[in-house]
Image 1 (cartoon, rainbow, N blue to C red):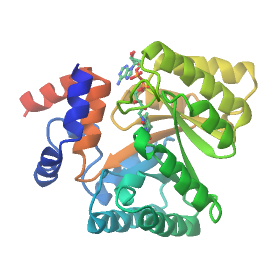
Image 2 (image 1 turned 90 degrees about the vertical axis):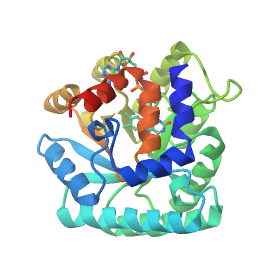
Image 3 (image 1 turned 30 degrees about the horizontal axis):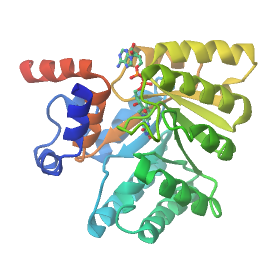
Image 4 (image 1 turned 90 degrees about the horizontal axis):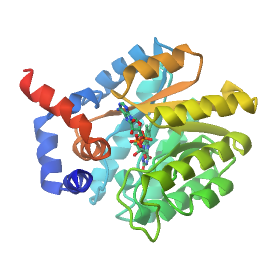
Length: 300
Ligand code: FDA
């Protein structure tokens, strides 16, 4: 019930634009690394000092005006420049819908080409985050198209989709982030129960660890992390073939601990004034995060 409520709130356009005006509120500052590039770069530097790499998400999604998509493209290129200039250990995560996928496919492709081309010059990797089912195939199409020219790109496989095993086979030569899946999907395309999603998640991770190029295991689930630790040991999979990823502000101690143990680790750094939808989805996944909200509201 709470999950549905927060997913519903995440899509509310009015609240989205109000949130942009008022800056980070409602406890969002504990999981969003600031509203501008300087703040994001500072957070990256701090994590790099602990041996943690970062993937930077200039927040924004469900854009339906060309000027907003163009502005998002320019902001992301500015982030690419900032990563290069400050020489931090970081790459980019972006969402195709932020760059105009819902407006016009070719317009979105052109925007992505500019970003991926600039990042390619600097040797910076670009990850295409995956959104809901309606945007899944078009996002893979964009990846296919750009792969004809560039190899600094990869994407996400969401384990709740029935088609995920086929996708992982097709994209096994890519650097892939494997996640459980964050959107509300119907039973004709996705597993609904936690047990089935978790089972498929482990199956996909194992497959890609054994057959894939590079695996980013993006989860806060200690059971999955402990399983992966045992699995790589049993199969002699070297640390260079995989990493763990978590979101900024979540299970911080565990993030530092995994990096200290010698595992590659990447923290997902969301920043920017379009923080509202991202934050509501995090509350949907884990209503306990509401505690953060309550603390922020009362500890002024
Ligand atoms: P899940 O929420 O299933 O929790 C499992 C168990 O882990 C819990 O029962 C609890 O015991 C423990 N746990 C979880 N969080 C905890 C916490 N904060 N503190 C203490 N214990 C905790 N999704 C998507 O659809 N597209 C995408 O592109 C991405 N990208 C992405 C990048 C990164 C870096 C991450 C970490 C996640 C994503 N996701 C995503 C989101 C992903 O699909 C998923 O919704 C969330 O990660 C929640 O699932 P988990 O696997 O983290 O554990």
